[in-house]
Amino acid sequence: MDRILLGHGSGGSLMHDLIRQFLAPAFDLKDTGDSAILNLNPHRIAFTTDSYVVSPLFFPGGNIGELAVYGTINDLSVSGALPLFLTAGLIIEEGFPMDDLKRIISSMAEAARKAGVKIVAGDTKVVNRGKGDGIFINTAGVGLLYEGIDISARNISKGDLVIISGEIGNHGMAIMAERNGMSFDPPLKSDTAPLNDLVRSMFEATREIHFMRDPTRGGLATTLKEAAIESGLCIRIREEAIPVPPQVMGACELLGLDPLYIANEGILVAIVGRKDAEKVLMRMREHPLGRRSSIIGEVDDSPEGMVLLETSIGGKRMIEMLQGEQLPRIC
Image (cartoon, rainbow, N blue to C red; front, side):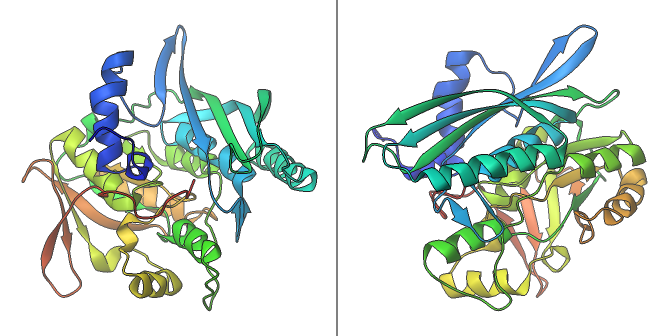
């Protein structure tokens, strides 16, 4: 393969290959999680960056501006950090409507205020008409790690339980529906939301949370496969326990898609020690963003590096990373 494909940005196997073969060795990256963990004695911080190229820019439940703010906050949060500061870089195409820009900037400011973080620096570039796609946004974020927290797939152990904080598939299918002029009843709406307060509540229940991730590109399936590979263990999940809203399921059936691979922007998946799982689950269900939280599986020691789904009819199937590109431009 001698050219970049859309699939290289999907969050699936092609993207992982790109990182492993080119980026990680070039930059000497030892960990490719959502945030870098940096020791600045006496504190530890999480540092992350992301770029947002979603199409359409405005969609049911949000827009590219608040998506950029919340997505960066969530990457810091699931790394075990309290998000503090963000930067924002805008790449704007010549001719972009000023009213749309004002609307996006206003939504970014409101999202930051709502989440309790500050946007402290930024940059603006304008490219020639036809050389962009309206607007792209790059963000970076810094957060202070909570004391006693070590979020890593290396900490996952046999017997740990897998918890999802809400329904899957809403964001990706809302984008798909809006892009293609499709409507559903009830309507599809993105789940874009800041997870930092939910994560804080979880840490109040216990500091023994072994792994957390927000399953964005590549969906729940790819996130769990990453955890299984990194830990060298097996993750077993139950199809009937995974909350999928009826309109997402209907849209997936109509379009021939699997909700396990659909992007999310306002939920997290956590792997927690068995003795603490119920306590964490109860605390999550008390939070507005965690009311639909549920235990969807557990960790086993074999077969190594695999995710196995127990289907609703009693069978089993292997879950792999997203292959290629399922939903282009969802974040």
